[in-house]
Amino acid sequence: MNRRSFFAALVNPPAPAASAAASPAITTRPGPHGERVSLLGYGAMRFPTVDGSHANARHGGSNAPIDSDMVQRHVDYCISHGVNYFDTSPVYCRGESEKVLGDALERHPREKWLVATKLSNFNAKTQSFEASREMYETSKRLLHTDHLDFYLLHSIGGGATRPKALKLFDARFIDNGILDFLLKEREAGRIRNLGFSFHGQEAVFRHALSLHDKVHWDFVQIQLNWVDWHHAQEVNKRNVNAETLYNLLDERGIPVVVMEPLLGGRLARVNERVMRRLAPLDPAATPAQWAFRFAGSHPRVLTVLSGMTYLEHIKENVNTYSPLRPLGRNEFDTLERAAHAFLSDDTIPCTACNYCMPCPYGLDIPALFGFWEEALVEDRLPDDPSAPDYAANRRRFLIEYERMFNKLRRAERCTGCGRCAPHCPQGIDIPAMIRKVDRFVETLRRNGRA
Image (cartoon, rainbow, N blue to C red; front, side):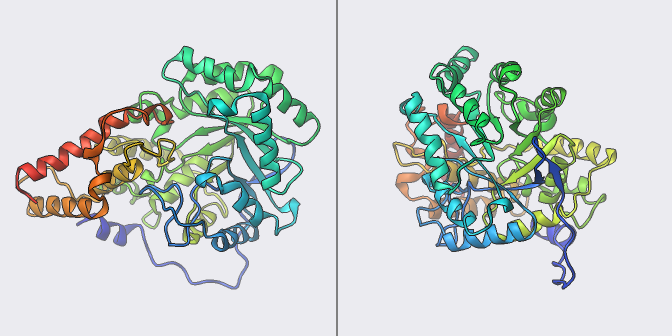
């Protein structure tokens, strides 16, 4: 049985007919200052585009304009179904996310929505006090609000080594005085909750937590899913197990905002070996439902973010949390065994954040990684040369590869300059991974299997 027929039989039953009865209320959690926060949060990182694609998507996204009308439909559906947490950043969706989201949210009463955005001062040009403050003020203007419900120091922990990561943290937030300014803004009520998001060096995470007595972090955003819970370093040596981060926050009573519940979409399309472990416990559940139930089952979690490009994604995730059915011990244990099966795949831990782009030599890095991983997960590359479809599947891979990427955008064009790698939150050795894709394609060509 191939993967598509397996999922069709086990995990994708027909959608239930619409009912006139009121839907169950979505699960909410108490926020740091008494606000009720929907367990599902809308991530404004992968907005739909007018050509039917999406911005910052796994296959490189689209240069087409964002479909603002569809975004408004998304926001309307979310708010009407109890989703009230909306997460954006100045750098999302080619820098357009805040404006598009702000225009959509402004159409609803302010008390109906909570907005989170970030101080995304990654570039040295944005790290002065003046530039960082301008970024903060611009966010409020674009989001049409006089206060930000949740404000984050964006993606702390970056840096190839511990000393560099700590130095970068201080340069972005401490030495320039911007953190002191944000604390005064919180005191004045223009920021309601102040926190940070984390990728990278554990030393920086612990350093930020050491400031808790002074800062009193209201929340922290971490990458949490059923693979990263115990196996983050197996996915990427630079990552920290989500359980470790969660426990450190739990000890201090700091609420957790979850990002990457689907590990950049990878947990929404797991292979048959994984699903065979999960299907007996709930034959009707999709991979995404398993992932969202896992993330929401941890009591310290305030909300779980999802970059939902299509209305169908929103509807499924709303349904999963209306209300949440927390996992039991047997289900947690089964997902841990499934994580081992998942990690046996030869995959690349790309979350398609697009921070590595643009490539100076024209490569579409997320698209190359996404196509490679899709080929693996779709079971189109069996390892056994005696398998009946061995040669045909490899021919199909090469044909699709050459159709999708013109000659100037293929893996062979990589010069190994390494400009992309420092920007990757997952710490992927991008040139090495691109060479991996290129070597496979060249092997097909040399062997004449195309």
